[in-house]
Image 1 (cartoon, rainbow, N blue to C red):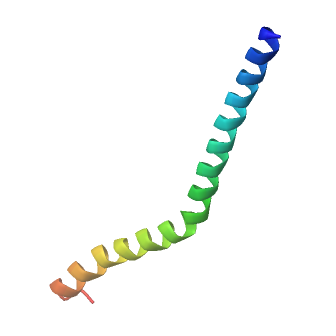
Image 2 (image 1 turned 45 degrees about the horizontal axis):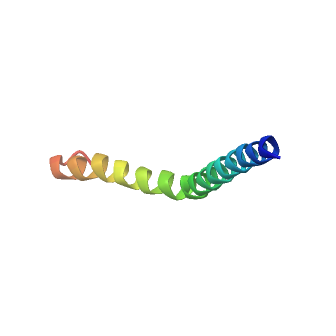
Length: 57
């Protein structure tokens, strides 16, 4: 009976790690497009503001 309990604990532990990893990956993938758009906006500001200040545009 003890070996079965140990095996069940190991299975439960691995299932919890898998669930946490899946939730983390889902959260990252869900925010990927928003993060890309935000980063693109910041980069455009970093390029356009100095160009406007120097009179290049």
